[in-house]
Image 1: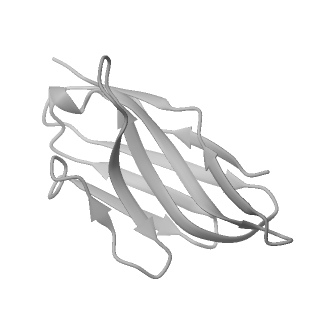
Image 2: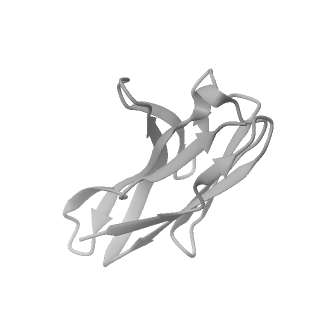
Length: 120
């Protein structure tokens, strides 16, 4: 199976920045997409940003112009650079990856989640 390990969450003041990382490990044949989701207390999980292989990144309207998603395909790692953070960005951020294992079985894996808190 594919394991995703996230890092980079924490407490930051409004207007500050954080960078999240998510590294995939396992017997991966190909990764089709790597995404970031978030879930705030009392709210449904929402897609923050996604970067499909060979495609253009997509962003939630609420983070456009402030967040940047990028991938290192050699390291099977996805990053989320978050700038101009707002209190409403406070949530647990989770990494997701989908693709195929060696042997071509599909996989869809989630990270354990990392807390991002934006507060003064």
